[in-house]
Length: 370
Image (tube, rainbow, N blue to C red; front, side, top):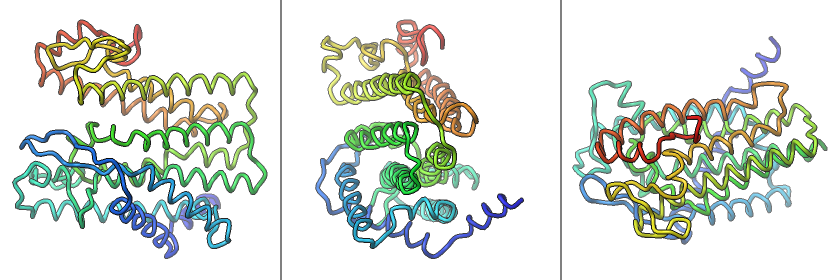
């Protein structure tokens, strides 16, 4: 009862948590607009228009890291502020996500725009339209909100982890488990921003409308559930043997190579269908579907890499509890559901070409298993 009461009291929003959230989002909005970055053309939309994205996420991240490091060094701010106010930030961010999604809904249904990005898609069901969104690419004061929220969620994941690491360091509890978890996540997140332009060709950016599902997923679910392992290690000391640590590293490296390699091949193919894959001309089915490289091994091989990475984030926590394995378990369910949805959509879109591709590449995610 006492633990539950402590959690509930911690969830009460505070003014300081509101300040932290809005200072963070304000910085990202300003940095995204001011800092230089590669201007990347997005996918061609149904009305033949296309958005352009300034991919300066890495520079924004590094600059903020520098600012926070100086703040911590000078005593202007505590490096554990996020870890100390985690529940408060969770509740404030959740409330903010709900309010933003309502704002998006009401602004969307009132839109009179005819272009693909801002044209309202209204089903007639309030719940469905609020959940899935009404507009494809809504903007606020010149900021592309969908791209902005993804960036905010990914960076928040890193900053929560760094605050947890600072708390562990000050408590003298940093060990191999903590180091492996922190390194794997930091590598993954920084690599995401190194290749941020790849995000412009993902399904979420191209086709998903912006509603509560994406806003909550980006701002709340990613940073606050993907860090469960970090919170667990903060409160539970896990000693890994060198063999287990080495195995964990191998799973991470293989997962990273598959995940990043597959996504890069798809991105390059969309930009230049004749670009070599693994040093050879690409095999293309029906002039549209890549069947070379990783995409000749499984139809959704990038999901396999993602699952291996998720597993590597949880393995440093040991096997005494299922709690740290929430992320890979959730991701497994999500990706199988998404793979099924993708298969149905591609079958309808490409018809005979998709059937031919399935015969050529029979495995969905894991060769010889699924």
